[in-house]
Image 1 (cartoon, rainbow, N blue to C red):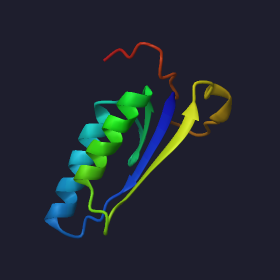
Image 2 (image 1 turned 180 degrees about the vertical axis):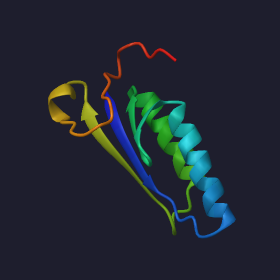
Image 3 (image 1 turned 135 degrees about the horizontal axis):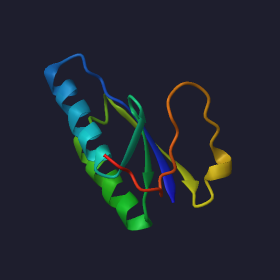
Length: 96
């Protein structure tokens, strides 16, 4: 299923900036960054639970925010893109 992950980390101190980098690095392992604090990830249920647990262990529950949006398996019709950034299909090969 396609999961949209968004986060807002309080970066007023060095610890917050470190949490921000750790969360972004963990999300990169599972999906594609589509905006600064937004990732699209193709995950199965087990991967999703594992990623949620990892991100929740990194974040500060009193200062940070983390949101998961479950778009499901038929997500193509649920996404409209406007603007200059190129779009991609998560299941297509990614050439680096």
